[in-house]
Length: 64
Image (tube, rainbow, N blue to C red; front, side, top):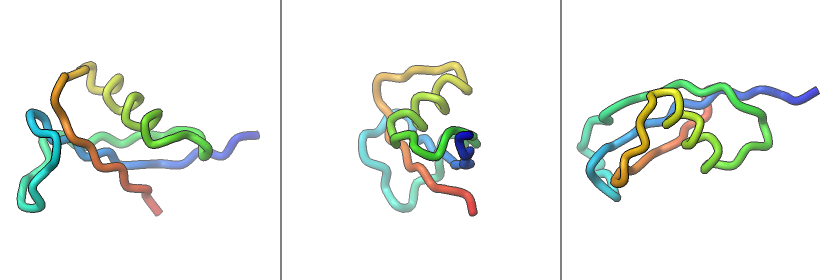
């Protein structure tokens, strides 16, 4: 049985590196298996919002 973890993914569209003072363009909550990579988490979040932009930055934070 796989453990499920919850992550918050913060997206910043139109930039490659977010400025610390920027507000996130979109915040998505993702539930995914514990052994998933950061790329898997970001892809699932992009699928949830239905967008695959060319230019974006993302931060993944695990919920406690």
